[in-house]
Amino acid sequence: MATLKSVNLSIYIYSGISGSYTDTDLKYTLQKSIISYQDNIVFEIAEIVRDYIDVNFNDDYLSKTVWVTTVANLIDDTDTIFTYGSPVTNTSLAFDGYGFYEDEINPQLTAYDLISSSTIYLPEDTAGKLPVYAATTGSVVIDSVTTAITDNGNTNQKIQYIDIPANTNTIAVKDSGGTTQKTITVVNVCEPKFTPYKVTFVNRYGAFQDLYFFKKTIESFNVSDEKFKRNIINSSTVTYGVNQAQQTRYNINATSRISLNTGFIKEDMNDTIEELFLSENLWIRYNEKTLPIIPTTKNLQFKTVLNDKLIDYKVDFEFAFDKINNVR
Image (cartoon, rainbow, N blue to C red; front, side):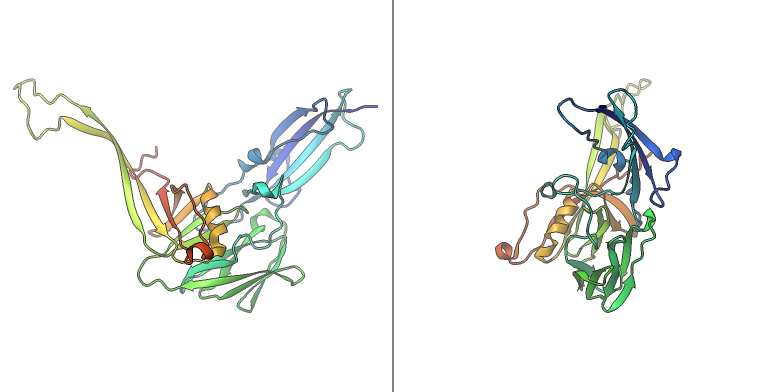
């Protein structure tokens, strides 16, 4: 009786409708042989699939998902394809998200709304966005106004960003049967003194999530340069002018930084703060532009009502580009 020897795995990554791949969508072909004392072959494809998820953001809130179809040809010990059970085809929807260690191996997305907290903070008279998963969510009720969620199977609407009108109070996220799966409280913050800044990041579900920082802001920048000592003697007159610099700077540039404060928030927001720290992709809405930033604060001590009474966080960010344009 023939036994499994190896697997040839073809990986198709594409947008659109599930199963609509063509030969041009073939991104990888992998081959792996079975280890003698094992009875299965495991492929880890998450990192290579991730290369094809575009997470660029320009305040546009687009669905960033792709279909992944794998076709596995099983090869037996006579170097022929198994008569039964081959090829094996599987199709999955991929997000640029992640699971925690406690979620165990290969966690699957089962959420409705795609945020971890049950509270959203918005500046007063300002609209917001709520990301939901179209495959599981039936409707979203915002202050008694219902928005039906439909799923046509296309990747461009698998993550839908529902508009939260200004001065909303409560959001109910329901499944296709009309059962409320989560209730979200919207806190409208009146901030008369400081300018609130919106930071958008890719959260654990692979969705764009907004977090407003309402309080004190400090802006700064760090300069980098090099110096060389030059000869300033005029060879004709054997003199030099004291207005000439002997020490000369070059390769001058700078990196801008911004320090933001959340203001007082609920303990429920700790998960959101954690995901912001763990995100690889963050942007700030700054001077009417969407600019990439990197958190430079590396340590986070979670605050609780029991320990700290009032909860707020200060986070330092660095703009992810040089101050002087050196893009060539």
